[in-house]
Length: 196
Ligand SMILES: Cc1ncc(C[n+]2csc(CCOP(=O)(O)OP(=O)(O)O)c2C)c(N)n1
Ligand code: SF4
Ligand SMILES: [Mg+2]
Image (cartoon, rainbow, N blue to C red):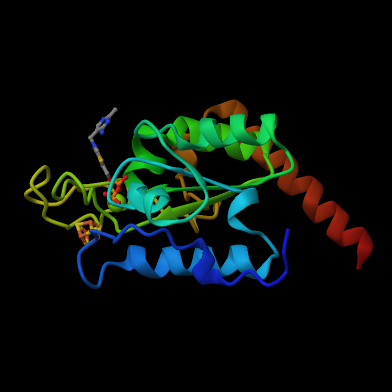
């Protein structure tokens, strides 16, 4: 690994065909900068790309690369890392690729916690195939496949599980549950009483 690698060394000689102003340019520059700043070089880097506008990223970067099958970038990245743990593996793909057709692989990649980086280029739509709703599209976002919006809450990568307190009338609870609740609240008030 040489230390004088600059992020431009990760640029291939292919001219991107992304639309002017597409956010994928910024993501690719960010990935190239991160690779250079962490002491990597094109000879020890493997980029696995999904299918979509985002999936073209492997062509525009100078490194080892594989442009595989829609939704299957993560298992390929896992295989590369298992075979060559010494090289830096970056997997990149779209929101459709990662959260829709590839959702199962996403979950298992998280579970296996493989030492690789996954970048989701989330434009909240299927870009390459001309604009169908993706799992991160807004509920009211009109697309060719959802003229009135997908009507599902978008999947958020920042979702936290929250326990919602549901108020239920005591009549909707079974007699057994009602008496268990009474017992536990009696226990609670006894404990509070002895402590004070
Ligand atoms: C197995 C399979 N199913 C469907 C397609 C068609 N297809 C190509 S790209 C794409 C969606 C791309 O959306 P996303 O992953 O969000 O990438 P973007 O183009 O938005 O960057 C689909 C459905 C395909 N190539 N292969
Ligand atoms: S269609 Fe959208 S995602 Fe694809 S290159 Fe154009 S702006 Fe980027
Ligand atoms: Mg997309």
